[in-house]
Image (cartoon, rainbow, N blue to C red; front, side, top):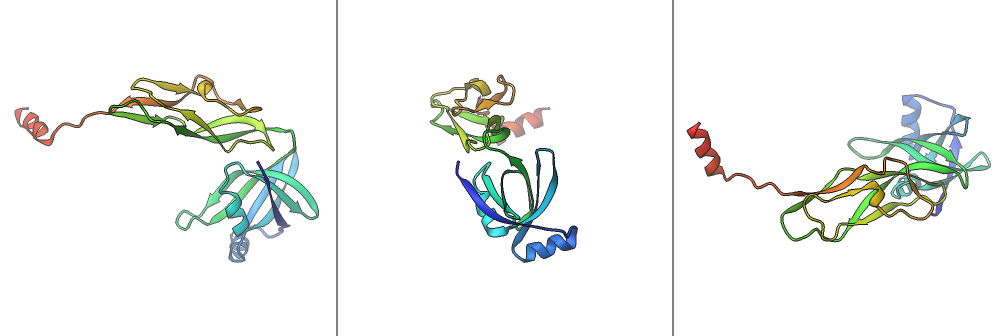
Length: 194
């Protein structure tokens, strides 16, 4: 995973009014914390941060007052209607350090022929990986699976250096038989008989 560099500015103003002024300047208020250090309040360039956050678990290289620090997004708050970034919490990490993150589960292949449905019990897996080698996602094959089949967390192939951070027997995907709906005429006939 590549590091994305962002220039950060320290901020001393807090509260709603200050946050609104920061957003009007096309910047995003953020806080950086971790490793026992006091939280550092910063502002980040809005457009660059928006683009960076398109990559899940992106590794950010932040220039804060002449010092470079690595961080990963921990919490992202967006405007509910417009989708703009309101605030970002970033967790400091070091090279070689292991972190717990959630990665998306993607499927490939087709289910067996028939009326089957694939249920994503978990859409993400919590894994432990080195901060500089966090996988964007994991892929599992569902080729030929029929109703009743399940894929457990331990069945999903993980990239080298990545381990599960959840119960290995947790169901991630399961295949269900599609339920046929009653025809409307049959339902009416049953209702009038009762």
